Length: 326
Picture 1 (spheres, rainbow, N blue to C red):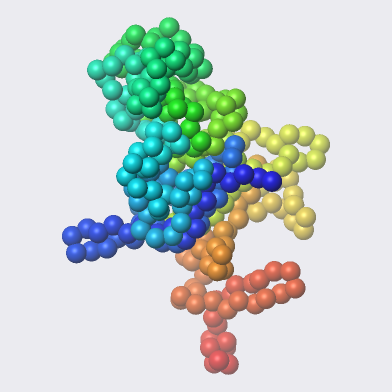
Picture 2: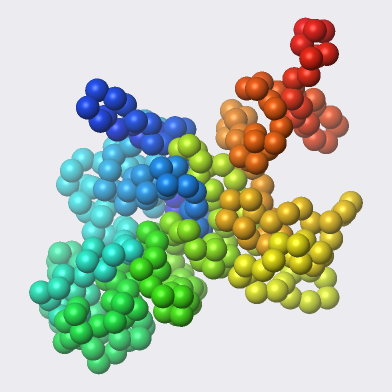
C-alpha cells in the first residue's frame, strides 16, 4: 500500500490586509506519496508559495486539513510547530541568504540544524562532513559563504536542508538565481539525492527542466490544484526521449495514443506530449477548473451543459436553443 506523506483536504488560507480579506488558497486538495518528487507550477499569486509555507509549518491554515508525516498542521501548538520545523521538513530557498549565515563557516552552517535539534558536537560534525561530501563540497568546510560560487552556495543549502533527515524536502525555486549550466548541475544533484536517500520532495518552479524531471507536475490556479502532468510510460520498442522541452509539433508526432495522436503537451508549462500527459484534477465534490485556453476560446458565459455519456462526460456551452428549451 502506498504511504501518503502529504495530504491536504479542502485547504483554505485567508490573509487580512487592512480591511480586506485575500483568499490565497480556496479548497485545495493534494496528496504526495513517500518517495515522490512533484513540481508545483502556476502564475504569480496562484497560491504556490502559500502552500509551501503551510507545508513548512511557517504559516497556519485558515480552514481545511493538512497532514504531513502524521502531523496535523491545523492542530499543532507553538512548541509542536517548532519541533515539526526542526525534524520533519527541510527547506531549500532560492536566495542563498535564506539558506546560509554569512558569519559561520560552511560546516557550521550545515551543523546548525543538528545543534538546534540537540545532537552532540561530534555526531553533528560527522553528519555535516558526510552531507558536504554528498553535495560535492568535501574539504570546503572551513570556507565562508563569500568564498563559494552561487552553485556551491546552493549545494551547501541542500546539505543544510537535509541535515535532520527530513520526511519532506521543500524547495522554492532552487535554481532561480543560477545560470543555466549551474542550474542543470544543481538539478542533477537534487535528482540524484532524491533517489539515493529516498526523499519525498516538493519543488516550486517556473523552470520547465525541473518540472520535466519530476514524477508529477501540479498546476495551481486561483488557490486550487488545477491540472496534473505525469511522465508517460516508455513507448513500445524504445525509451521515451529525454524529459527536457522539445518543439511541441515534433513531440505530438512522436507517438500515437489509441484512437489518434497524442494530445498537445502541458498547457501550463509546455512539457512535450511525447513524454508527458496532462489531466484536469477533479476534487471530492466534482469541481474542476477548465484550462484557461478553453475559457478564452469558447464562450461559456459562466455556465455549461454537462452531457453524461456511457464512458465520459461532455461539457458544452449553453446555446441559444438550449436556453429557449429551458
